[in-house]
Length: 330
Length: 253
Image 1 (cartoon, chains in turn red, brown):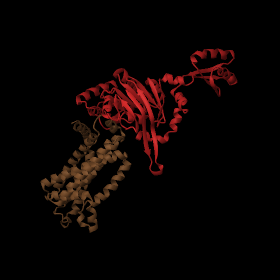
Image 2: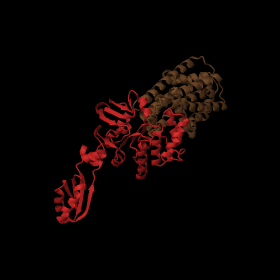
Image 3: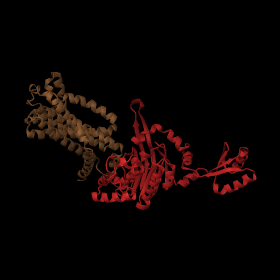
Image 4: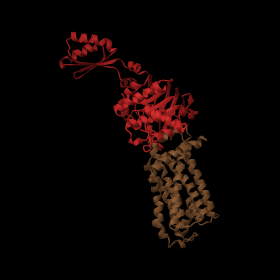
């Protein structure tokens, strides 16, 4: 459905002596199969939106090629646009227009007849729980309703491939969970291939079959969430014990775990397959006379994955990228 | 065919939004109407000394105000576009297969229709206040107004999509409009001025257009001002449309 090879996007910023080239996207290769739901993950400024804008024909690649839905993004951009739906980060409707009117006009720009656009629009309003909001203005909608309206705009022409850019940014947890259901429905109900960018780990985890991680303009990983997590060496085991038993607990955990650390009353270390080794650890601790206040086993998160792959945590990466806010505006 | 259809879709959408908020049409025409009502009377004792072919202050003033309406009204069209861009509307339209020039043309159609309505109001009001003019010449004057209005609206949309900021656009428009206003002879004829000022104003296309509309209202459609004004209006319309479509077609905008 999507094949990209060596995609590059270079922006020029500043003038004269301050002029510099910014490689927002620096050689991206990616493949997405039909029917896949792919999560595109990375910190702000990593090149997510820029890549997406190249794949959706909004931005001409500086170098490289991309085929989307069977068409070249540069040579057959109109065919690409016909085949894809795009739900952008900023929205797609004017705040002071009726929601239904915006959807119908949008469908008509895709070549649909007014009657078809009205019929399809109303179906989608129902599917996305927007019934009764046809004559509501977006400025009078809740955040969740507005995002769902944006999704309707992106789906009006029944695209086979849907791009969603940060679909749940700024939504409250309930609206977010609700939108997740609808995004899952894109494939199960409409049979669409879905490509979504996010910087929420749990979102990629919950929705995507496969995750692509981009950092500093390059793809650094592409795999299922489980396989990516398996790359992180093991599960984190955290023991909490009384002060006089910390050393002994650390010793016992150290016999099966890597990188044991002590933090106050907590002892933590990574083990392979916690499910298999924890029962033995418990027996071992008991026979060594260690009384546990608590034990926690944490599966690796995508944050851990990012840390393993790039040596930085996602949050640090975002803090360091404040300078690169031009991406969204470019 | 699809270009016309797509322009129409955009046009109808824009018109619908304008009709929902007609205050803008009225705010746009407030300025020329105020000039007409509050400045017109001041010209009455002076106009016979202007040597512009009319003794009627309103026949002199209305053509200038028409051109002013075409320039100023249309120049503010771009502000609405920035709002739409900020809300993602432009990008959403650009990701459809619709022709990108149609996205501009549909908006220009709205601007020209709005300007047409405002022109009729202005001319009608002028007539009530005592303006008299040649019917064909008035039609010509309004046509010329629409032509430069379209040009200015296209330029304004291009500027809006290039700057994407009201804060940048407002001063730019101010810097451009002040000399245009002063050198076009909209309120007083340039012939009153010293020679250097007259020579300077000869380089101002809008002065020729104002003179052309004035001659039209006076029934003198064969004057050289009409020729030059018409040529300038067509040239400006072509330039504006070229800039506008180039901006809308640019890949990264």
